[in-house]
Length: 100
Image (cartoon, rainbow, N blue to C red; front, side, top):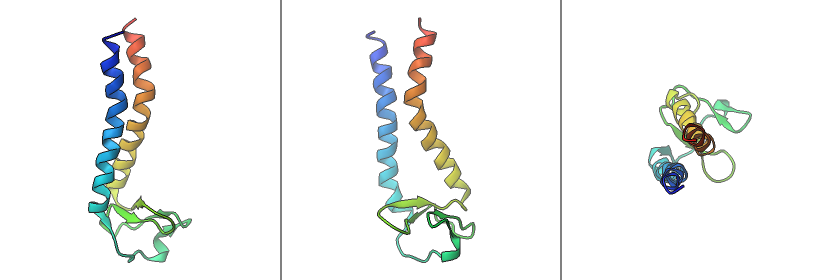
């Protein structure tokens, strides 16, 4: 069990560290002014503008940022965040199954 503890700590701390880094990078990579055209907002919450190179834009309502889904890199960010969120749930079970 002592060998398992460092791996579990890593699986818990890695996503937290990634989210901390992303929270520091978002204000740097985001647009701060509201030059987002109304026609580019789908359902009022999804910003899709392939002509806009910005990865993050301020949300239309509320506090925070959203991805520009017209930028191909936004899909990469979305996949990475999803995998990092799922990893702490799946990987410990895989580790336990292999090391029985």
